[in-house]
Length: 82
Image (cartoon, rainbow, N blue to C red):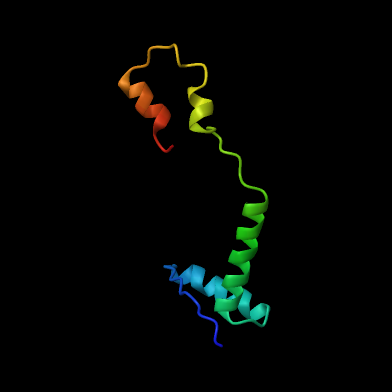
C-alpha cells in the first residue's frame, strides 16, 4: 500500500533557492529531502521546547487588572494577537 503525501509549496528568492541547492548537494541529498529533514528537525525542537512568549498569555496580561478601569483602546492593545 502506497503512503499518501501532502505537498507543501514555498516561495523563495533565487538566492535562497541556490543556497538550499548548494547545501543539499554538499549533503548529497535531493533538495526536497534536505528541506524536509531540516524543517522536521526544527519542528521537533520547537515542539519539545516551545518558545516563551515575550508578552505572555492573555490571562497573564490581564491578571491584576480586573478592578482597573481600562479604556477600550487599552483593552484592544492587551487582547490584540491573543
